[in-house]
Image (cartoon, rainbow, N blue to C red; front, top):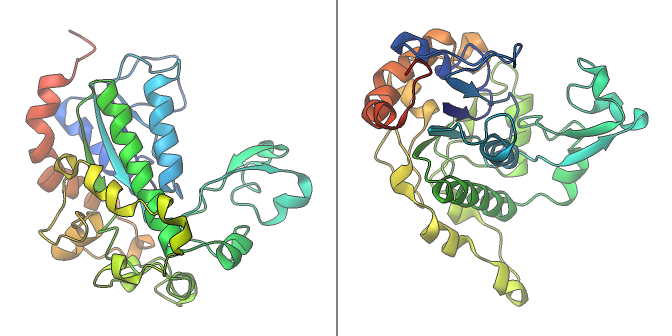
Length: 288
């Protein structure tokens, strides 16, 4: 079984995991869990990197797929997203993401997965607690721990990104502009910057024992990433956004998300040629 995971650039049937159908693989159907499938896609719209990490862990160790994952492709999202398990009581539900669409989630623990949204339920977090340093270190820990999960289970994998994670300016004013700029809301190319590591806030020296960004960058295995360009910022290169832009693919008409044709093009022309041999080596087909 092949595991795919990520944010809205991966979750759903309009995204690149769907292109596996073209190569004789069967897609996982989330509406019929009684059937055995070749591929499970646990990507979710609005997911941040903590949620992506935990969904990967569950896929590897939960009862549903445990022992059946042969290969994994993990797509990381922007570093600014905040995922925290929140108990959504009725008085909290008015502006909590997706509760109106899914009222059955009321009075239960819900994860935020609200994408880049600093104005909704998470407004207090972004105004009072958010920092670029925190966004960077949380992202690096999520990546490092996920690599350890996969390594400890001897599962081969590759990782891709929504875009160059360290080439997006995730200061609060930039994130607010991303949401409120009429006509370009959600266009992550507006966040392009030279190097996010040069924009980290000053660190209080008395907490030096937990300033581990440098160590995490040294521990992450960047050889298991597939970047779409040769830019190197702290180890990170381009992702899907850069690849689509470099190939003159506009995402304006689809709310700054790739449509099925664009996702398939990315899979066919960039991702599949780089993973085909590894997938065929490790993947166990159902009919064998």
